[in-house]
Image (cartoon, rainbow, N blue to C red; front, side):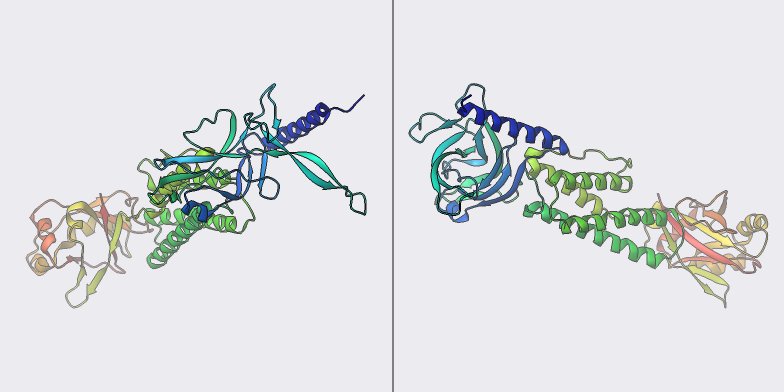
Length: 434
């Protein structure tokens, strides 16, 4: 049997098919740019020229410019070109189509060009070069408006405009379909940004928790849960920065999971909605949308619905005074008084609302001396979920009806006189926003 070109061609097709079919299922989106350098000087002259490119095309063809493949000819975009993507392309294999052509067959487009190269016989010690014909990939650069149906293409940039001096302006936010985030400055920058946002938010929550102490209220529990979430993701993003390589889809998956968990705290219905989908051919939009969501979620200012207002005790007159600096609380918050004393809880719950005098600071003396009713205290069956529960405390809501409450908005503070003997008396005043 004579060896014919078809034997070698069939062997190549078999090996390429074997490699592609074996490797493609190992991970999704196993094609894209690994490394890309576009000649910046050529852009100033009105040309788009590829200096270096390592990539895998959608059909599995590997590209290595200039080490293994010749760069495509530069293109000169038309002066009217605006907001248009451009692509690195190679003709796809087609049934019964000629895959290789010589330079003299310029009218015949082919996947490979034939070139003669002197190749040394590596098994012999002395010079043993021989000319052999090699197939060179006929790579081309095509724009969005060019016909590309017969080509395997990969987007490598976006033209913003061609200026009057012919200078080509590229979109610096464009992200090509990539294989490695480390080699893409934009994706690498996103990793660093998310890590910074997580660190900043975690430190802010930790400081707030440290200042508030261990109250145990719902708001504090929410802060601890959010801090636990962030503390889990921050080292993961720091780890990504130190990896030698990682795929954009892996980054997106981590960002998606983070956004979904943050929705528990930042979304009105506590559910993730409107999150972007991963589109390998449009990583620009994919990650811009994802980063907008993460910036929003990590930038949400959590206002605690419950705010404790401390009492100051004036022993000479037997009055406890709470200064409320935010006067708007009197109109849009519920005030809850927590009381504890060394006496049976039921006795405290029934006796304290009858004896205590609560009202504006300015009228406290009058209330005590004249035994006039102040702001009414209404016993609560349980502590509101927004404030800490402490064993032994009874909880009372301040009734906001009546003229006495209306005076609070212009008062210097809220006064409280126990009106009886309550050994070991402890008081806490909370304002709970609606």
